[in-house]
Length: 404
Image (cartoon, rainbow, N blue to C red; front, top):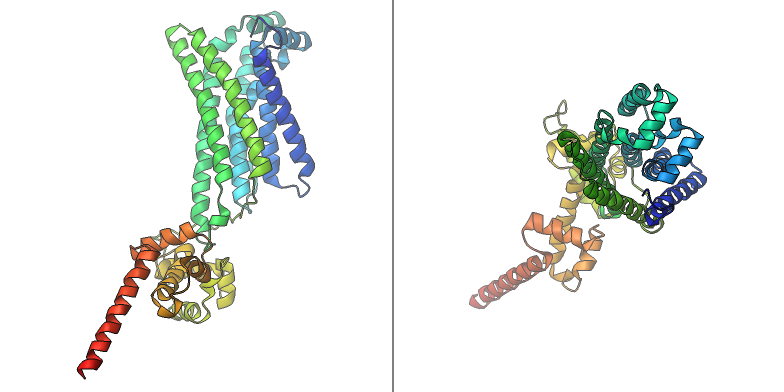
């Protein structure tokens, strides 16, 4: 990047920063309800404005000269973004999934790495004389020396960890959904998983680049050709990931059915003070008589209101007595009703699609999967089996009548 001003690699970095700026401004202008998750995501985008600018000034000779003319103290400002975008992405996902999330003082501990990096930079760079700071920047010596390189690598590895933690959040969220909702297909987070997977690939690529640098530092032999290939490839990968993000935003972004983070699923070893048999009987009676489970969007709150009991009490009783979460509990009733309809000769003209809608499912794949897991047959196989059994019963009954 030292030979040509505004070469194609530079333009990719400039476009990346510009797109992040526009995206951040758009989100800021449209965040009328002041949603906290949006603020975290705007912060994440701001980091990705500074990162390409940092790369431009760090590796581009002319950009480096311009930055030195302004102030050498501004040179490493963008490097702090590598320590911040991971936590911001994590808090974006966490606040998106959990409606009761509040940023607390203890969360400031996530800023500890960037504070340590800043202290290091104060000692090794900002407190140096003007000429020494110029020399460190112009020779790029600092980029290939310790302890700066160790801090740089730590920042890149942290980003991978935060991306993985985001997937842990999604997994835990999915488990909690099963204690609240009976149908989950409308709450698919495919767009979020695609976005996080893209960033995980990007962060892992950057971490690999720093691993190569650390290997070079340990052996006092930097493979500049390999580093150049990885570095430039990272620019294009970042640009691609950003455009995937923009595409998802304007095509697939959907609202998230957020839940309470504090309402964590009960562990199997947690016991109620005693399962009230009257409560169990009331639950079973209501389910049998009202067939409320056939409501496609039934939730634990709706069922609790129908039974006139606290939702937490209902959820705990289902967990402790029936040994199921709410999702499994409701769908087990739906499967039993589907089995009744599939074996009923009067419902023989109903299609399987009509039946799974009638019992409360709104996804054929979920119905088929759940049915086969419980019955160990597909709905079609079960219907065929029951039809043969009914025909056998009829034949046997007719034979008995003839003998009489």
